[in-house]
Image 1 (tube, rainbow, N blue to C red):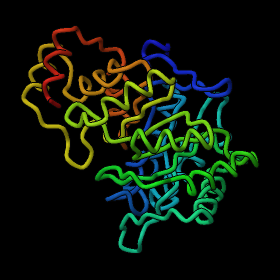
Image 2 (image 1 turned 90 degrees about the vertical axis):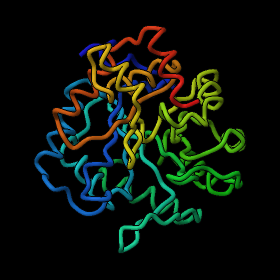
Image 3 (image 1 turned 30 degrees about the vertical axis):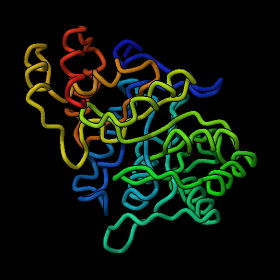
Length: 288
Protein backbone atom coordinates (compact mmCIF):
# COMPACT_ATOMS: atom_id res chain seq x y z
CA UNK A 1 0.00 0.00 0.00
CA UNK A 2 1.40 3.39 -0.97
CA UNK A 3 2.21 6.36 1.21
CA UNK A 4 -0.61 8.36 -0.37
CA UNK A 5 -3.15 5.79 0.75
CA UNK A 6 -1.89 6.04 4.31
CA UNK A 7 -1.84 9.82 4.31
CA UNK A 8 1.88 9.90 3.69
CA UNK A 9 4.66 9.52 6.22
CA UNK A 10 6.13 11.82 8.83
CA UNK A 11 9.83 11.84 9.72
CA UNK A 12 10.33 12.93 13.31
CA UNK A 13 13.97 11.85 13.73
CA UNK A 14 16.56 10.07 11.58
CA UNK A 15 15.41 6.72 13.00
CA UNK A 16 11.71 7.54 13.33
CA UNK A 17 9.49 7.76 10.25
CA UNK A 18 5.85 6.81 10.79
CA UNK A 19 2.78 6.45 8.63
CA UNK A 20 0.41 9.31 9.36
CA UNK A 21 -2.40 6.77 9.44
CA UNK A 22 -1.65 4.78 12.54
CA UNK A 23 -3.57 2.28 14.62
CA UNK A 24 -4.67 2.70 18.22
CA UNK A 25 -4.71 -0.67 19.96
CA UNK A 26 -6.76 0.31 23.03
CA UNK A 27 -9.99 -1.33 21.86
CA UNK A 28 -8.39 -4.75 21.62
CA UNK A 29 -8.90 -5.30 25.34
CA UNK A 30 -12.20 -6.27 26.89
CA UNK A 31 -15.08 -3.95 27.80
CA UNK A 32 -13.92 -0.60 29.22
CA UNK A 33 -10.37 -1.48 28.10
CA UNK A 34 -10.20 -4.06 30.88
CA UNK A 35 -9.55 -7.78 30.74
CA UNK A 36 -9.14 -10.10 27.75
CA UNK A 37 -10.68 -9.47 24.34
CA UNK A 38 -14.05 -10.91 23.42
CA UNK A 39 -12.46 -12.56 20.37
CA UNK A 40 -8.73 -13.14 20.71
CA UNK A 41 -8.27 -14.45 17.18
CA UNK A 42 -9.97 -11.37 15.74
CA UNK A 43 -7.78 -9.08 17.86
CA UNK A 44 -4.66 -10.77 16.50
CA UNK A 45 -6.05 -10.55 12.96
CA UNK A 46 -6.63 -6.80 13.25
CA UNK A 47 -3.03 -6.19 14.32
CA UNK A 48 -1.66 -8.28 11.46
CA UNK A 49 -3.99 -6.60 8.97
CA UNK A 50 -2.83 -3.15 10.10
CA UNK A 51 0.81 -4.00 9.44
CA UNK A 52 0.00 -5.76 6.17
CA UNK A 53 -1.78 -2.57 5.04
CA UNK A 54 1.43 -0.61 5.55
CA UNK A 55 0.72 1.03 8.91
CA UNK A 56 4.02 1.62 10.72
CA UNK A 57 2.66 3.40 13.80
CA UNK A 58 0.88 1.46 16.55
CA UNK A 59 -0.23 3.23 19.72
CA UNK A 60 -0.57 1.23 22.93
CA UNK A 61 -0.02 1.27 26.71
CA UNK A 62 0.58 -1.39 29.31
CA UNK A 63 -2.43 -0.10 31.26
CA UNK A 64 -4.69 -1.27 28.44
CA UNK A 65 -5.98 -4.51 29.86
CA UNK A 66 -3.70 -4.10 31.83
CA UNK A 67 -0.90 -5.83 29.88
CA UNK A 68 -3.47 -7.60 27.69
CA UNK A 69 -3.03 -5.36 24.63
CA UNK A 70 0.77 -5.33 24.73
CA UNK A 71 0.82 -9.11 24.99
CA UNK A 72 -1.53 -9.34 21.99
CA UNK A 73 0.79 -7.07 20.00
CA UNK A 74 3.74 -9.27 20.88
CA UNK A 75 1.87 -12.47 19.98
CA UNK A 76 0.65 -11.08 16.67
CA UNK A 77 3.71 -9.23 15.44
CA UNK A 78 6.90 -10.31 17.23
CA UNK A 79 9.57 -10.42 15.86
CA UNK A 80 8.55 -6.98 14.69
CA UNK A 81 9.05 -6.05 11.03
CA UNK A 82 11.63 -3.42 10.18
CA UNK A 83 10.17 0.05 10.20
CA UNK A 84 7.29 -0.70 12.58
CA UNK A 85 7.22 1.79 15.47
CA UNK A 86 5.31 1.11 18.67
CA UNK A 87 4.37 4.18 20.70
CA UNK A 88 3.43 3.51 24.29
CA UNK A 89 2.35 5.53 27.34
CA UNK A 90 3.10 5.56 31.03
CA UNK A 91 1.56 7.52 33.87
CA UNK A 92 -1.42 5.44 34.97
CA UNK A 93 -2.34 2.12 36.50
CA UNK A 94 -5.64 0.29 36.59
CA UNK A 95 -7.52 -0.43 39.75
CA UNK A 96 -9.11 -3.79 40.51
CA UNK A 97 -12.41 -2.22 39.46
CA UNK A 98 -11.00 -1.13 36.12
CA UNK A 99 -10.53 2.48 37.23
CA UNK A 100 -7.86 4.69 35.64
CA UNK A 101 -5.54 5.78 38.44
CA UNK A 102 -2.79 8.35 37.78
CA UNK A 103 0.61 6.95 38.73
CA UNK A 104 3.31 9.53 38.16
CA UNK A 105 5.92 8.84 40.85
CA UNK A 106 9.30 8.80 39.06
CA UNK A 107 10.25 5.33 40.26
CA UNK A 108 6.91 3.91 39.23
CA UNK A 109 7.18 5.54 35.80
CA UNK A 110 10.47 3.71 35.37
CA UNK A 111 8.82 0.47 36.49
CA UNK A 112 6.03 1.02 33.95
CA UNK A 113 8.61 1.44 31.18
CA UNK A 114 10.19 -1.87 32.13
CA UNK A 115 6.77 -3.57 32.17
CA UNK A 116 6.07 -2.26 28.65
CA UNK A 117 9.44 -3.62 27.52
CA UNK A 118 8.71 -7.01 29.03
CA UNK A 119 5.18 -7.40 27.69
CA UNK A 120 6.11 -6.15 24.21
CA UNK A 121 9.27 -8.24 24.06
CA UNK A 122 11.56 -5.29 23.36
CA UNK A 123 14.97 -4.14 24.55
CA UNK A 124 14.12 -0.47 23.92
CA UNK A 125 10.89 1.41 23.30
CA UNK A 126 10.66 3.59 20.18
CA UNK A 127 8.53 6.30 21.79
CA UNK A 128 7.18 6.68 25.31
CA UNK A 129 4.52 9.30 26.03
CA UNK A 130 4.16 10.67 29.54
CA UNK A 131 0.43 10.70 30.31
CA UNK A 132 0.25 13.92 32.27
CA UNK A 133 -3.44 14.73 31.78
CA UNK A 134 -6.57 12.59 31.74
CA UNK A 135 -9.41 11.89 29.33
CA UNK A 136 -11.12 14.96 30.81
CA UNK A 137 -8.41 17.47 30.04
CA UNK A 138 -5.03 18.93 30.92
CA UNK A 139 -3.55 20.78 33.88
CA UNK A 140 -0.77 23.31 34.23
CA UNK A 141 1.14 21.32 36.85
CA UNK A 142 4.88 21.01 36.46
CA UNK A 143 5.96 17.72 34.92
CA UNK A 144 9.70 18.31 35.17
CA UNK A 145 10.33 15.57 37.73
CA UNK A 146 8.21 13.00 35.91
CA UNK A 147 9.54 13.79 32.44
CA UNK A 148 13.05 13.91 33.86
CA UNK A 149 12.67 10.30 35.03
CA UNK A 150 11.87 9.22 31.49
CA UNK A 151 14.73 11.30 30.13
CA UNK A 152 17.05 9.30 32.38
CA UNK A 153 15.87 6.07 30.76
CA UNK A 154 16.36 7.67 27.36
CA UNK A 155 19.98 8.36 28.24
CA UNK A 156 20.32 4.75 29.40
CA UNK A 157 19.02 3.52 26.04
CA UNK A 158 15.73 1.97 27.23
CA UNK A 159 13.74 4.66 25.39
CA UNK A 160 14.67 6.13 22.01
CA UNK A 161 12.26 9.08 21.89
CA UNK A 162 9.90 10.88 24.24
CA UNK A 163 6.43 12.32 23.91
CA UNK A 164 3.63 13.79 25.98
CA UNK A 165 -0.07 13.03 26.40
CA UNK A 166 -2.72 15.34 27.82
CA UNK A 167 -0.54 18.43 28.07
CA UNK A 168 -0.67 22.19 27.62
CA UNK A 169 1.65 24.27 25.47
CA UNK A 170 3.43 25.46 28.64
CA UNK A 171 4.08 21.88 29.70
CA UNK A 172 5.47 21.10 26.25
CA UNK A 173 7.89 23.99 26.62
CA UNK A 174 8.91 22.77 30.08
CA UNK A 175 9.54 19.25 28.80
CA UNK A 176 11.57 20.45 25.82
CA UNK A 177 14.01 22.09 28.22
CA UNK A 178 14.71 18.59 29.57
CA UNK A 179 14.75 16.43 26.41
CA UNK A 180 13.46 16.53 22.82
CA UNK A 181 9.75 15.83 22.34
CA UNK A 182 8.68 14.07 19.13
CA UNK A 183 4.96 13.66 19.73
CA UNK A 184 2.03 15.20 21.58
CA UNK A 185 -1.13 13.17 22.11
CA UNK A 186 -4.17 15.17 23.22
CA UNK A 187 -7.93 15.06 22.94
CA UNK A 188 -8.74 16.74 19.63
CA UNK A 189 -11.33 16.23 16.93
CA UNK A 190 -13.91 18.11 14.88
CA UNK A 191 -15.98 18.91 17.96
CA UNK A 192 -13.09 19.48 20.39
CA UNK A 193 -10.92 22.27 19.01
CA UNK A 194 -9.47 23.72 22.20
CA UNK A 195 -5.95 22.73 21.11
CA UNK A 196 -5.97 24.52 17.75
CA UNK A 197 -2.98 26.67 18.72
CA UNK A 198 -1.05 23.63 19.97
CA UNK A 199 -1.74 21.77 16.71
CA UNK A 200 -0.25 24.71 14.81
CA UNK A 201 2.74 24.87 17.14
CA UNK A 202 3.45 21.16 16.69
CA UNK A 203 3.34 21.59 12.92
CA UNK A 204 5.80 24.49 13.12
CA UNK A 205 8.19 22.41 15.27
CA UNK A 206 7.78 19.09 13.38
CA UNK A 207 6.17 17.38 16.36
CA UNK A 208 3.56 14.74 15.61
CA UNK A 209 0.16 15.67 17.00
CA UNK A 210 -1.85 12.52 17.61
CA UNK A 211 -5.49 13.01 18.45
CA UNK A 212 -6.83 10.52 20.92
CA UNK A 213 -10.56 9.98 20.48
CA UNK A 214 -10.40 11.25 16.86
CA UNK A 215 -13.98 10.09 16.41
CA UNK A 216 -15.27 11.41 19.74
CA UNK A 217 -14.27 8.51 21.98
CA UNK A 218 -16.71 7.30 24.61
CA UNK A 219 -19.26 9.73 23.14
CA UNK A 220 -19.08 9.34 19.34
CA UNK A 221 -19.24 12.48 17.22
CA UNK A 222 -22.82 13.44 16.43
CA UNK A 223 -23.25 16.31 13.98
CA UNK A 224 -25.85 17.01 11.33
CA UNK A 225 -23.24 19.04 9.44
CA UNK A 226 -20.79 16.13 9.46
CA UNK A 227 -23.50 13.75 8.27
CA UNK A 228 -24.49 16.07 5.41
CA UNK A 229 -20.90 16.68 4.27
CA UNK A 230 -20.18 12.95 4.35
CA UNK A 231 -23.28 12.17 2.31
CA UNK A 232 -22.25 14.74 -0.29
CA UNK A 233 -18.82 13.13 -0.60
CA UNK A 234 -20.07 9.55 -0.69
CA UNK A 235 -18.12 8.68 2.46
CA UNK A 236 -18.98 7.77 6.03
CA UNK A 237 -19.07 10.39 8.75
CA UNK A 238 -16.16 8.63 10.46
CA UNK A 239 -14.05 8.73 7.30
CA UNK A 240 -14.71 12.45 6.84
CA UNK A 241 -13.80 13.16 10.48
CA UNK A 242 -10.50 11.32 10.04
CA UNK A 243 -9.75 12.99 6.70
CA UNK A 244 -10.38 16.38 8.29
CA UNK A 245 -7.76 15.62 10.93
CA UNK A 246 -5.21 14.56 8.31
CA UNK A 247 -5.76 17.80 6.40
CA UNK A 248 -5.73 19.93 9.55
CA UNK A 249 -1.92 20.17 9.60
CA UNK A 250 1.13 18.51 8.09
CA UNK A 251 2.05 16.79 11.36
CA UNK A 252 -1.30 15.46 12.53
CA UNK A 253 -1.28 11.69 12.78
CA UNK A 254 -4.21 9.35 13.32
CA UNK A 255 -4.54 6.51 15.80
CA UNK A 256 -8.17 5.37 15.43
CA UNK A 257 -8.91 2.15 17.22
CA UNK A 258 -11.06 -0.81 16.27
CA UNK A 259 -11.33 -4.52 16.98
CA UNK A 260 -12.72 -5.24 13.49
CA UNK A 261 -10.68 -5.86 10.33
CA UNK A 262 -13.49 -4.41 8.21
CA UNK A 263 -13.62 -1.23 10.28
CA UNK A 264 -9.84 -0.98 10.12
CA UNK A 265 -10.01 -0.98 6.34
CA UNK A 266 -12.70 1.71 6.39
CA UNK A 267 -10.47 3.87 8.58
CA UNK A 268 -7.49 3.37 6.28
CA UNK A 269 -9.62 4.38 3.30
CA UNK A 270 -10.20 7.76 4.97
CA UNK A 271 -6.61 8.68 4.10
CA UNK A 272 -7.56 8.53 0.41
CA UNK A 273 -10.32 11.12 0.90
CA UNK A 274 -9.42 14.68 -0.08
CA UNK A 275 -11.85 17.21 1.36
CA UNK A 276 -12.61 20.19 -0.90
CA UNK A 277 -12.27 23.68 0.57
CA UNK A 278 -16.03 24.23 0.89
CA UNK A 279 -16.41 20.96 2.83
CA UNK A 280 -13.58 21.94 5.18
CA UNK A 281 -15.20 25.32 5.75
CA UNK A 282 -18.49 23.64 6.68
CA UNK A 283 -16.77 21.15 8.96
CA UNK A 284 -14.81 23.90 10.67
CA UNK A 285 -18.07 25.35 11.98
CA UNK A 286 -18.69 22.24 14.12
CA UNK A 287 -16.06 23.02 16.74
CA UNK A 288 -16.62 26.79 16.82
